[in-house]
Length: 413
Ligand code: ATP
Ligand code: MG
Image (tube, rainbow, N blue to C red):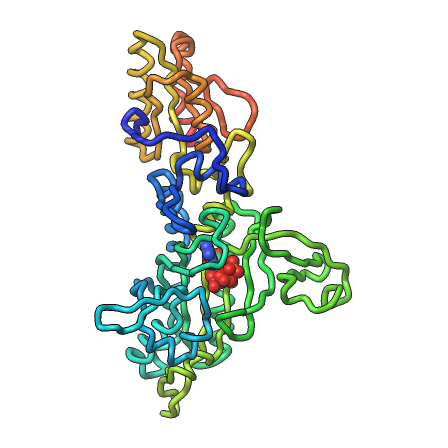
């Protein structure tokens, strides 16, 4: 992308309503734009980050054997009446009616819809176990939308639902998805912790959450490393860890949540198959969520400095930005910058070129604010020695590198 052809700008001023660093930086760098309370548009740079996270999640879910589907965002009330959640779910559920006065909700989660699909499609134990997942927009009418996309009303979630004949098959899948989540959060470069959790609204027994550790987190985690114990404090009854060890505390942002639902939904919705003896058996279920859009904000909470965002390269909107230090009449700097840009594009890099006629200071400040991991600075002075300057975001000092060596420098990264 050439910035001369990018119509959007960044903002110097801190938006008044943004209390959290990630929210401020996302608005200032133009990753998102607010439409109304808890509703945000993902602008081009923000969407690139969101898609990268989505793709890492998709790749790891596919590797577990889970099958991707896409369910409607709008759901009919009758399914929610079967499970009793039409009334129980409360005000988070946005209800609406169509032209025939039939009632619907905007899905905050999809247990009812997937259970309806499975009871219609599956009839024998031979089709089990199975895990369906989707990456889709959810709506929850949060009482206090805040912190930008961290607690929005419309947000992107990966939700998956597994179905089993017995508990041991559910245990196995629960473990497998737990490992996949570890792979996902490690690849995203997050400092996170898996903790025991309350299963809350959704119901069921065993449940774990994945928390990105950050001072600004809404949740409190208690842990004891000697006992390898960590839990959301909502679930901790006593003053100590289960073995009597002393608890330490940290704050976390919930980015993932896995549950064993047991037969809660399959019972109320009569979702069963024939087992090997020909008897009808209610299915056991697991469900597994990841807050994809929340991860964008959580990552910024962990990766920033006073100048802006510092993206891990796995999810940066661009890996590299070329900053052309242009003064009047120095065609050669633009020419060389374009050449490097085209070379890197051919090699498959995601690269931006700041070819605007802005002051160097403005270009540096914006590259830092947006958080691109590497800056290649092309200037008349450098070109005289056939070099460019390389700056790594978040690290001190520049390196002069010969123009002929930059490609191999990145190949070896
Ligand atoms: P929270 O406790 O933060 O309200 P939850 O426990 O109600 O979340 P789950 O039902 O577990 O949420 O949903 C799965 C994931 O979706 C959560 O772990 C979180 O990352 C994300 N998520 C939930 N609510 C929101 C929201 N309002 N905005 C952005 N992401 C959200
Ligand atoms: Mg949760």
